[in-house]
Length: 189
Length: 189
DNA sequence: GGAATTATCGACGCGATGTCGACTCTTGTA
DNA sequence: TACAAGAGTCGACATCGCGTCGATAATTCC
Image (cartoon, rainbow over all chains, first blue to last red; front, side, top):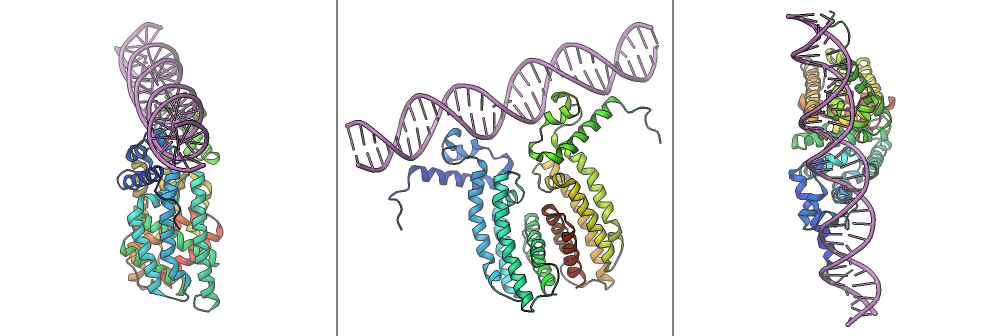
């Protein structure tokens, strides 16, 4: 569905800001990225930046949006399956690890940002993910595939947060193995 | 061992700053605490603050030092034991949860601060804790108490980071139960 | 080809940080 | 006890990053 004939100048600039942010995240601690840098990278003045985004945080949020989607897609297969499915689980974790490797600074920032607006967004995303995992656990339990134990929501919270925390510190393949093992043991014994 | 006759004026002020920080942490988001507030709370001018601390971060670090010590002490009993010891484990986790309830903002801040100096301190502390847990796991394994599985260091990392992440989000008694269950299942089946 | 809309900038005011030099206490000691 | 050295304190700066405003330039659309 063609929305507009040509990308407006503004669209280009907006992308330029986003791209600059992506690049900077690779080399500069997120806390030290300044609106000046973003604007300069996009070839506009600092005050011009505000035409496109309300704040630095808004930029990060836009970036995070994309990554969060990939993250969700990566887990879909395991989430939709049932019973102990090592392959699906490992694949989901492996993709997740890759995303953490590629977007570490951004995701780490997302994980702990104090900014209320940002925090709300994060909690919303995490909450959704948590619910899906909890549902998966409840399903397995009711079908007799998974062991009884802590409430599904609680267990989901522990495992999901473990995943985030471990990948934040070390998104390696070994970490994937370890998480796989802990998750399977916690759910299926 | 009496070190000094009287606490010097400076010592008192330093404590006053620390106390002010403690109080503020209970009511103001850590990111919004300003040196002004700290100084005012201690009854000195903003520039006077710098006589005692190099920065806001230095104050937080001093506070964290204390809490970290309590945290370590809380885990000692379980760390020094061996085999599946639900009581010791639960007690360690329960005390930990209490500390998170009491010092949540500070600990959360510590968990994610970007400040390089602070981050180094944190990693040092976490690293030490990780090693102790890894040693505990290795010991249990070699004595045949714990199941084989991922390398002790890896497993320790996953479990410890899970603990931090879960308590950061929710240091409740239910969380203690859940963590207890996951840890025991991961180690002893 | 001119009115609306879109894009851009410089200048301003704000709040926080950190530094400096000067001033005032305190304290030990000659 | 006087007084020098050090401890403690402060106000005045200089700096930086943020966000806003009003003016202006570029573009699009009728």
